[in-house]
Length: 304
Ligand SMILES: O=C(O)CCC(=O)C(=O)O
Image (tube, rainbow, N blue to C red; front, side, top):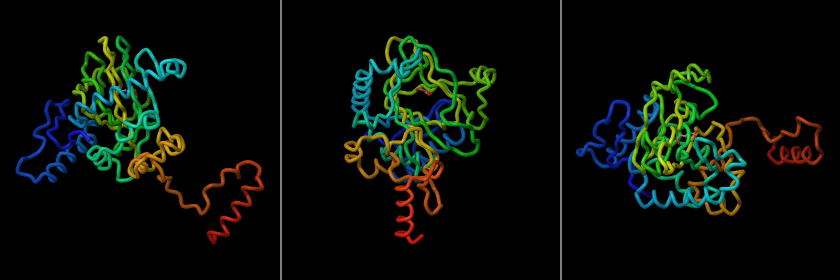
């Protein structure tokens, strides 16, 4: 684990620096709680926060190496799958692809922050690696969830910064407080919003955590170096994740997960349903005898 979220932290952009990170007269745990509460408050109010020093320098180096190795393995596949565009190169399902990334979803302080904002049962909806392509174009402004729901944070994207993010190398740009607007996809509205974006510059090792409903995008990387990041996208327990980790990770990976990793990857996090027998999708077609029999037996066994 790297330094904690509650170590001296800077959350600059909207109006510059956001005051002292922790008061020395507070006991350590109170200071940690206060700092975390400040970050949670920033996500709710301005739509984002920046937490510096989440990854230690050696962890940043290890994560860059791991991400580069995944990118290298997928060099031929990426263009065919649309994972390489004029703007970025992306890779999905990182917990399956490299063990180092499994711990990204359960780092104590970050997970505590996600739980503060999204509830205790929140799960990881996706874990992707992304670099803005050197010399590439900017992404268009967008949101990361299906629709806007002003007033409630449903999703948070925690971008783990692996190369210093700057305006020059295509850092994330974001419209502060835009999570309170309704996203319509209207081209004129999107073009007008560009003037309101701010550049979220942050040193490597930081996490930029923003409400998935905030209007944002990766910017053009005008350098000849990659601008790498890992996107840990957390969702409330009842929101459908982008990826079905329990169904998709291999048995070998699933077997090696810690119980907390399993919980955060959504193992056992089913929808809140109350019908007596929810697994009856076959009824939509013609009844199949074996499934009918299984259903009858199960009801008998469950006394329903
Ligand atoms: O990495 C970034 O700066 C943001 C990328 C992004 O918004 C996306 O790929 O959807």
